Structures are given as structure tokens and as C-alpha cells.
Image 1 (tube, rainbow, N blue to C red):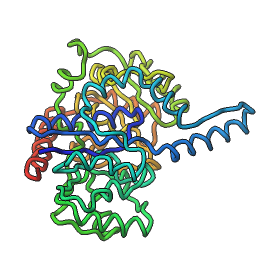
Image 2 (image 1 turned 90 degrees about the vertical axis):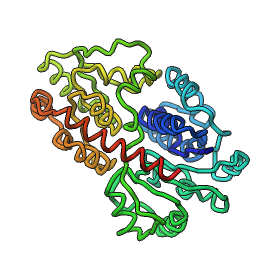
Image 3 (image 1 turned 135 degrees about the vertical axis):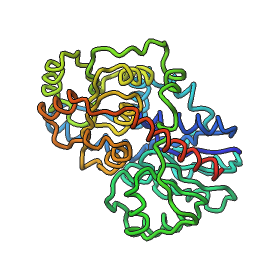
Image 4 (image 1 turned 60 degrees about the vertical axis):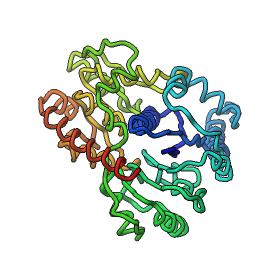
Length: 369
């Protein structure tokens, strides 16, 4: 079957790249012809956000800043110098670039037999350019199978306008099968948005967990040396400066070398990012996919939750694999030392639960394609 996958526009988010890679990989293993629908970030939307931030910075610092779509693309390529080869190798084939809702007409010629939306926060309106497109508004008249795999709202709060609720709800009814990443999404769909589906909505794993640690070792790690080293890998996206001193104190107390991921002018490769988690003695992260890979690679970790970015995805993941106690919203030195130094991990049990959920999630894809 020829399948087109629609996910969030890429913006050098490691989890975003890897969930697309994993979903494409498992579908190809099932024998399907899989294409990435190449949705780019909305130029005007992104440029205006950066422009406003630049204007604020200019007013404060008196420093003149120019930002436009061309400079954004240049920065994207510069930052992603080490990342983009992964996309060219693994996230292929892909369609023409889709830069607006109107551009989706370009892909009709591919004659897809099925469209899959997912995963990641593809149904979170404030993260998505043209939310109705992620319910296949552009394919409303196409004769094609429509499937949602591990789609996420990112939060358990209502964020859609009344217009969005009505439009997306009508499109949702056309889905042949729907699955979500968090159980809280089912309550949003049924209780708050009052949408109905052709078949019951299922909860499935994030695509990254459809692959095993061994899959990532074979496909994504450039060399076979995955020996655990004496590092505390810190992958922090929110307010890293406010946590830096605590992280350094934790590393000293645990007699580890701190390895702090920072957003620099050139980002580490996806392979290096994965290996940093896989070989760390401990991990501290506030990233959903940083948490996913810590669990998948059986590394002792702390997951720092941010209520403003949504806790539902973190809570649901960690509850189903019995690691809920490692999610904190109040991060401190004492909490970090207690959670990392206590040997509370039953990795055999965690791995067994992931295996069961992986098989159920793969079965959702197999039975609906």
C-alpha cells in the first residue's frame, strides 16, 4: 500500500525526527511504500513570531536585528548541519515541499492509498500551521484511507476555537481508524469536543517505542561502542540557565561528568544525541522524547514536567510503565539525588510492559492497513 505520513513540520527537534523515522521504518518493514508529506513550517507564522521577539530584543538592547524567511532557512541549515544527513538517509522518499494549505494539492498526483497523521502533537492547534489540514481537510474529497496514529493534543485542556471544534470534528468522522498517544485525549475527543469516530479510539505507543534499543544501535549509532560511561546527560529545553547550577551540584554529588545539551549554532547529530542517552550513567531531562529514550535504553532518569507545555503526555507514558515517581515538577538538588541514587528501577518489568504495548500498537497498524 502507498502511504503518506503527515507529521509536525520539522524544526530540529530530535524527538520529532525520530518519531517520523520510527513510524516510516515499521511501515516499510510491513511491506508498504511510505512517503513523508513534506510540510514545512508556515513561513509567515514563524517569521512573525521571530520578528516580534527580535523587535522586543532590539527595544531592550538597542541592537538592530533583521529576520525574514530567507534568514530563517539559512539558520535552519546552519544549525542542522549535523542533523540533515539523517533526514536525507532515513526520511525518504518525501513529497514536494508544502508551505501552505493550498500547496497540499501538489501531492494528489501521488495517488496515496492511505494517509496517516501522527505522531507527536499534531492536533495541538498552537503548534500546527492550519489545524484542519492535520485532519486531512485537503483530502476531504479523496478516495483514501484516513488513519491517526498516536496523535497528540499535548495537553488535557481544550485549546480549539468553536470553529475549529466544528470543522475538525466533521473531518474526524471520516477517519477509518484513530489512535492517540495519551488516554486523556480520548476524554477531550468524547467529553469536551463531542466528536465521534467510525471505530473506538485506541491508545498506542509513541512511534519511537515501536523500535527496540537494538534497532537504534543498528540503524542510528555510527559505531558499536555503547558502553555506559560516567556522565550525567542533561537534556533541558526550558530555562536551562536557572537549572545549570543545580545540575552541576548533582553531577558533583554523584561523582559524574556533567554533559549539558545546549542549543548552539550547530547542533549535535541525531546519532550523537541518541548515544548520549544510551551511554549515560544518569539522565535529567524535561523533554518527552528524552524521557522515552531514557526508559527505552534503561537509563536511570528524572523527567522534569512543565505544566505550561502539558503534563498529560509525560504522566500517561510513565504511569503505563510504572515509572511515574520519576516525573517531578519541583526540581531541586535533594529530589534529584534521592531519585537518581535510589535503585527503584525494575527494568525487566519496564521492558516487559513496553514489549506488550509495542505488540498492541503494531497490531493497530497491521489491522487497519
